[in-house]
Length: 179
Ligand code: IMP
Ligand code: MG
Image 1 (cartoon, protein in one colour):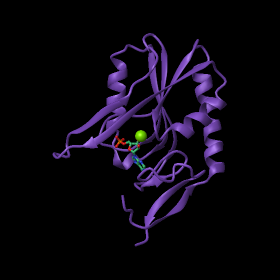
Image 2 (spheres, rainbow, N blue to C red):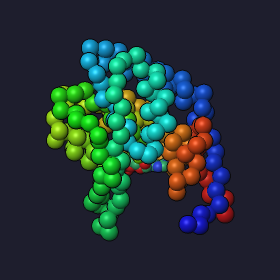
Image 3 (spheres, rainbow, N blue to C red):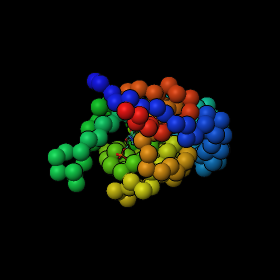
């Protein structure tokens, strides 16, 4: 695939991310202090670095599982569909589940994933999203924990890609087209 030339402008530094992840982990650890075993569900692929950093800061017994969903708009724009490309390995019935997402944008992906997981009757289910674009929301989903609210910009880094690139950037940056 040919890509238009672009550069990446730093939006959130690696240091700021680390500090925020530590603060989120403290809140999450105290919220689940009474829980036997939390199941942390990472939504692939964008959340892989965030979940790796987050779980290492949690002061709790946790299980980690992954799910991969792909969202795409169909021709009518108003209806969005989400496909499950990889399902969880484990059972979540009766369990406390924390869904970890990279970005909540329109919210369709998260909404569909939560609807699917609800049918399996978790005991409680909450969401932690690294980034949130409130101005883009088209659904009623909310994340209980959000790392950063960001403006309507296309971002990359810290696990998040543009056409599969830039996931390995240590910071979060905004894509700016140069050509
Ligand atoms: P939603 O269904 O519109 O909320 O889309 C959420 C998904 O779209 C996220 O999990 C990301 O994978 C992707 N996404 C949304 N905004 C961005 C962005 O700025 N950069 C890269 N991926 C994004
Ligand atoms: Mg995603």
